[in-house]
Image (cartoon, rainbow, N blue to C red):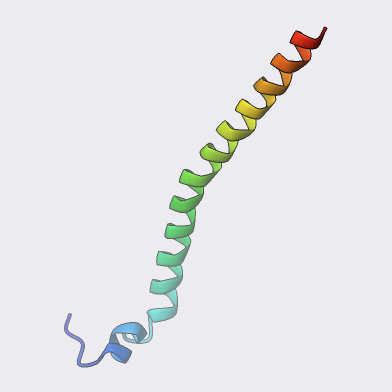
Length: 58
């Protein structure tokens, strides 16, 4: 498929909305697959540190 201009490339022959929306959703899901485990790990480490401090103070 050949496009004569960048605007035509973005429009994708009237299918641009669906194409770019699917790319956006895919990138969003991939970003969540990276960010959510990092946040969960951080939360787990904070909870463990809090638990250890609590056990040491008893």
